[in-house]
Image 1: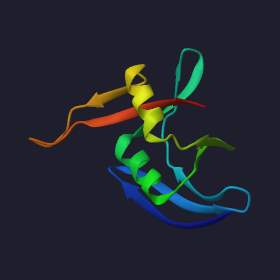
Image 2: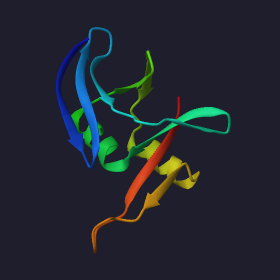
Image 3: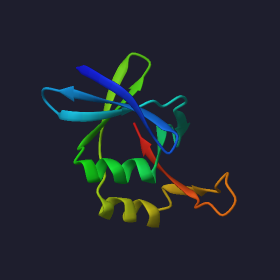
Amino acid sequence: MITTTEKKIWGLRYTEEYDPELGIVWCPRIKKPFYFNCKMTVGLNEKFILKAIDEGIKVFIIKVDDRNIPIDVPDKRILNKMRKEKRCEEIKSLFKGGKPMRIYYFSI
C-alpha cells in the first residue's frame, strides 16, 4: 500500500491509502479498541463515515497491533438501522451550542 498524507475529520485522524485490490481505502487511527459482548469493537464518528460515503470510499482498514482489518463502509440505510438497534451513541459537544457527535460502533 502507498500511504498519502494524514488527514483529520472531526478529530479522527486517518490516512488515505491505495490498495491494488480494494482501491482507495481510509485507515482511521484508532487508539484504543475495546471489548464489547466478547468482540473487539471500534467507534467511528458519523461525520467521518458520511464524508467517506460522499468521497466514494468503500472500505476502512482498521490497524490493530500488526493486523489490518477491513470494514465495509456502511451506507446511509445501514446507519439508520444501526441507530434503531442502538449501535451508536451521541456525545455532547464540547462547545456551547454545538451539535452532539454521534459515534457508531463496529465489531472487528
